[in-house]
Length: 76
Image (cartoon, rainbow, N blue to C red; front, side, top):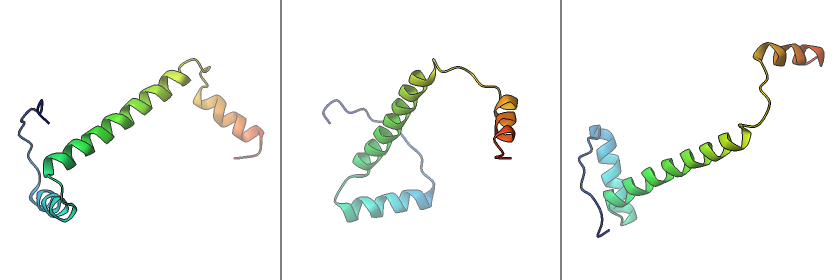
């Protein structure tokens, strides 16, 4: 992490304690754990954006029409 940047993050006391205990029991640093958690969240966001782009070309369906279709098919 030679290019790592220092930031200040404030945790609720219970969250901080749990994080420190988890770091100690897994032989990892709090920084490693926070970096991994942020990386996972960003990866999930990237997946969501990819899915959104793939579906952007799908035709729109109004909610009312969707509900009417459910009723016609006996689902409601």
